[in-house]
Image (spheres, rainbow, N blue to C red):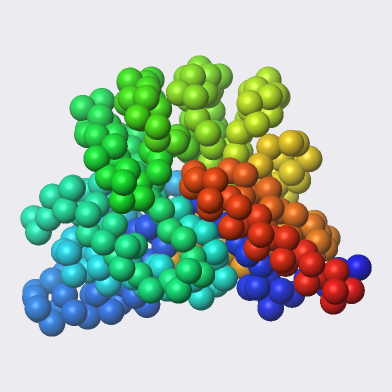
Length: 347
């Protein structure tokens, strides 16, 4: 069996991306183009050039990461034109990286130029109109921010229910893990489940958000998938495995933002891959951390000496955790099967 893994191989893998924040997936180059256009319309705009504000030598952590969105990217991308441009750029990036199934997530937000509903419908229109050529199927997850009130969270769920027919498949809980009381959102996630929406939750990102009380509360929301799953005590890990929850692992994000100690080889990927849970490699915020999904597969292969067959199997495990329908699962299983057959013939 051929075992060599290189960038060309991981680019061709039939990859599934399930944890990608829309705004965090916009590259500095795309944001620079938006910034240039905004500057031409408003020479007095004081926002710094994204190529400077988000330069690759910048170091992001929990303290500096979230203000980048609330005080910078959201202000820069605050018009329908900027949302259309950036969303299309993000979709192109994932398609060109060989992603065959994508679930983007975004928090409904308003600005002077548009309401929260207009923002969501603009993103959905971009997804519907994107010329993927049947190579990539894309769906949307709406996010509740941990800093939201229950009323705001219920409004997110209402938007998700309203736009299910256009490809909204689930609801997420995200935001600064050091903020908020997650227990207030139980009714919102109950309503989402009642209307057939799937649930994914950012889970145990930092020690402050990993108390048994918080983790038990989040698991009481009956999630289908969990993101990050870093600081998980053994008893909670056993429950996650018993419930066979999908696990969205974001390696470069965790390493670069110092959510874990050490490098890729110290990541908790191997501890979860040994369980029966569907494990899905994800990018989280490729625009900030600069690692496309194909590179995440390459990093994991290099750090843990995984073969081509191992990576194809990883793609297959991811399929079982998608929020799409059975038709999508059949399509993806066929792509994984085809990749494995090509590998056998190559060997």
